[in-house]
Image (tube, rainbow, N blue to C red; front, side):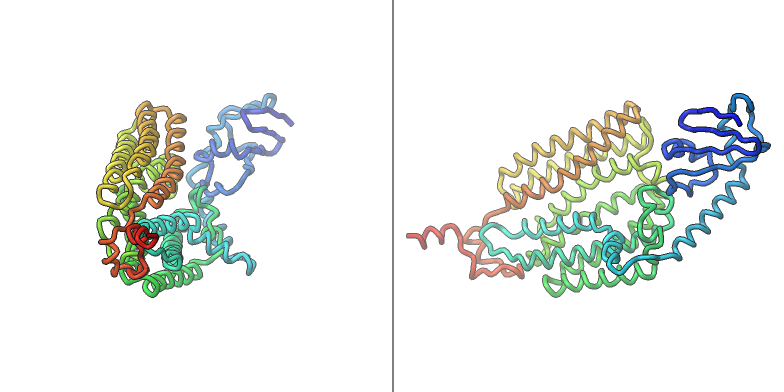
Length: 426
């Protein structure tokens, strides 16, 4: 028996066969040349090769192996793919979920973490729409948040149902409940339908039909338009940004009963924020998205596609600044907000510019690092921006106190202006 060490692999050559024990890291390098991408879920694997199957170079004394000779034949690749699909079917037929685990399964199927961020934007839209000095309804914002959360989870669940085959090809999504068989498509469809109907109904009953209509429209756009577009055109990102822009408008509509200029500004802020947020993520996950069959704008470093994506990131950072400066002019927030937002937007724009420069330079490692910084920066940017807006939201005046009938949670008779407070003290 002869032994040798090649890279990270320990190769053993018995008299009758060759056994390769390959680490997870080494496998990730060799996976394109080995039978099936299906084994992305395995931490390790073994290849059994006949000693006579032929290496282009082999020495029984030294155990030298030409790795290129390990590439499978077309028939082997077909057999591996067939075995993969058979294994998936077996896995999906074995649902072993304990009763107390179902809430967690439902939460993951509805992308609970992402839906929570969506709900945060709706709550912020509600809070910003209610000026300081007007009575604030905690019941109203709670019902708005609950309805938005249910609607968002419904849309996300339908998305996972439709994309379960694509998700199975990607490491990032390969352990989702629908992919590994924790929940069946029928079961998930029933849960998603109940969540969608419940969320829209809750908004209709506790807020107003406008907010409910926006939630229903968002479920429809996400499921019927955005999801299929992901496999057909890179412009799916812009449609997805519309989906992300609607939740703060739901909150605004729930608080005021209409969609004024403030609601459009809130929607615009969320639309533009999603460009650097998602395009940086799409760059980092570009190889997985290709395996999943999704079309995304970012390409490889120094490519025209990546240049267009990074330019879009910088352009929308400028749009964010313009809207933040315009918000005080429109009477939505105190002028001090514009100062704070300018500092925040400057830092955000710098991260986008760094992503652009590294991408043009063509350094894969540096480009990936800058994309990651931009993505993480976007996660910090959004709650800070919304927090500043809520803190600096507009203050009511005596004239405005007379016209709040459009808001289901405001009562003009209970509003006391600063002028009235001073008069009462005297």
